[in-house]
Length: 591
Image 1 (tube, rainbow, N blue to C red):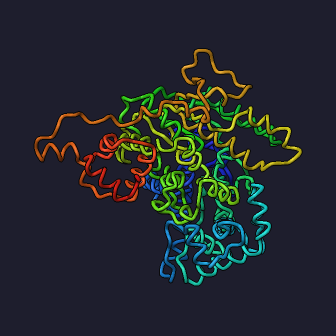
Image 2: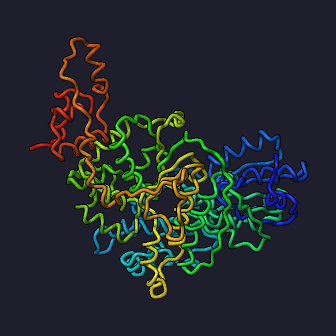
Image 3: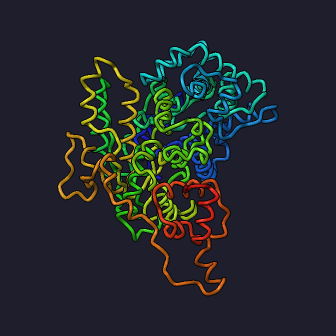
């Protein structure tokens, strides 16, 4: 294959090297060629960002006959060194807030639900330490990552207690008294100061690596190559650090993107130039050399779960004939928080159906207002999003979600989707022929409003920088066409007249979307025709014999609270009216 001069220059280097590579610049191809041009007897380790990238990379290296390359993730390496043949057992899903409170015997103060607030901060402090390169908790200042006024005040008041309980949590895992987490064994791996016996170590997506893994990487004797994009760092909330700014290795660049054309490249650079408002000297260079004209794969990308759900609702409302949609990362994950609480739990709290709430933390709340107070003290972003969705759509939620689920494809059928939905984080590293952006990204107008405050109050510049990165990453997922809201277009950028690449949209903001006719999503009533045989009856009511689950009960309670009639409930659940009335009576949903 023909390589660019930039790629050739990288292959000719012999020492430690960092490569700043723009989106779609062929960095995986470059890494493979780099491995191919080393001594065939060399032992090479390729570190992938996550499991899916690892599996994909394995196939690529194998297909090129590079049997001397070992492909791992940071966690797979750590697992092999720390967990295998040990006393440790893994809690794969992590601990819930109420579980941490119970395990550590956390006692609350006079403040309502303070035991859960304390446990929430213990969980975050624990993760902050495990992902750091520090040797002990006394070297950490957890207050540095707490930003909200109420949350900061709470942590400051209880700092010693939070630190003490965080250390206790680590010690219990270390002694094997409780199951360990993925964060724990990665930290244990870093603290063990491992020696990795390789001649070359190639670290991909370095801008999103944790400080713990970078510490392991930097201390190896091997020749090291780290690849990433300074402007694609979007995981600081997981305590990732931009390794490209932490190394003094010789720096080379990949500036030519083979994914998209020059117009998209200019737009991407215009967005990145917003960083000058934050005081960052920034002269991004992105050259668009993509030439594709395909429009097979189409995606809608949002910054947040809430923004994506809003777009999905709007889409299925406006495009009734569309029957095949797909959510990156499985739609189920968009209705559950990482800690286990579901959208239905919050909805049942909203409707005061507390006995139907499964999550223990949510069940302890007496009202939505109490939950919002908890969120303000813990900065629990996911729960905050769920509350916003419930306040916006209330008892329409079960109908909306059912409609979306009915159109959702399995992973194996993704390529048949008429539209793919994804947040930026879930589509990192992916590309689509055409994308449309939701209206929930940072805008130049918002940055300009913040600008006078930057010098006075100095807000968290890292977070604002990452907000710009999120929009950049979203824009650069397209190979051919981009539909983008007007408010996200930089004032310095002028779309080409009659452009075939960029379409500027005038669309309502998320706050305005509640005016859309969501009641139209109601599943149509079944035909009045009666089933005269058992076979016909079973066909028409194929869901009638499924057992009632907690999720079904939650849906039923929400719909009943919203005034949905029995006939409509029967159509919604695919059950007889008698079965619906029986369940309503059993759950005591009506006086």
